[in-house]
Image (cartoon, rainbow, N blue to C red; front, side, top):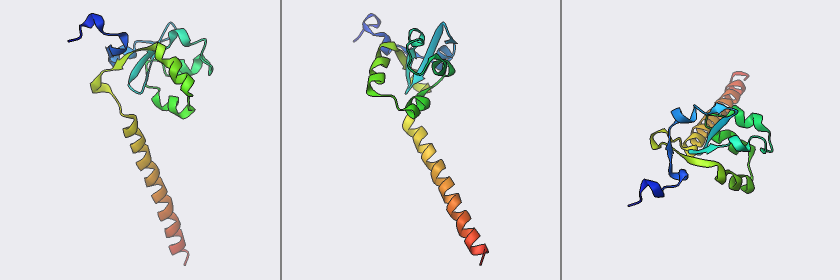
Amino acid sequence: MVSDLNKTNMDRVITFKEVRKHRKQDSVWIVIHDEVYDVTAYLEEHPGGETILLDYAGEDGSQAFEDFGHSQDAREIMKKYKIGILAPEEKTSFLEECSKLKWAVLALAGAVVIGFALKKYLNK
């Protein structure tokens, strides 16, 4: 059995309620793929500027992180800022979010196809 004294900060379970308390420039926490990062010390070093980090302070920045296409080097740098994981009951599945987006895109594509078919049919 592992004692609490042997657990690392990376094992610390953090709720969104706690994350949302860290939205100021002197304390910036961000959730990326259900992992919690304290990026306060990284604000000035962030190549994209501190503004983007502050925009997601206290929030889930997973989608923005992936949309930007961070390099493997960026993912390695992140490791030293990880302070814990999101509470299991609050975790979001990135794959579920992608799946929802996939269905929305398919529905939109279907609507466009139906629109063209109706237009062609009605113009006869």
